[in-house]
Amino acid sequence: MSVPLDLAATGDRALVLARYLAELGRLPIELFTVSSPGLSDDQDAWELTRAAQLAGVGESRIEVLHGQDPAATITDHLRGRPRALVVMGTSGKGAVREWL
Image (tube, one colour):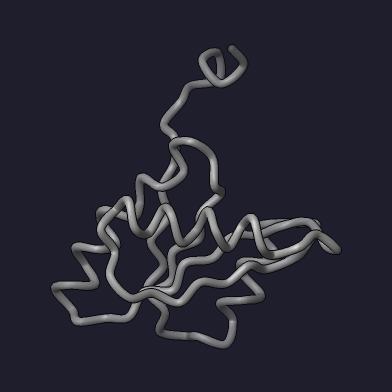
């Protein structure tokens, strides 16, 4: 199961559902985020690990991807996994609330 996270304050909402589905299907979890090219993986990897711990996710694979276009980077990453179950979340904010 692949769970891309944006590392925003509410970006980990998908983790609870992912943990539940992984437990039901006895599936491994891969958490990843997309960072700008050239940046170190250290901070993002730490934040992914922390988000997993806070959500009660057991063992998981952590990966930091690099690319200018997050959607294209995620798509390229998943292209080699034709049966991947992808769990994504959203902050659920409307346009005005997002602006504020």
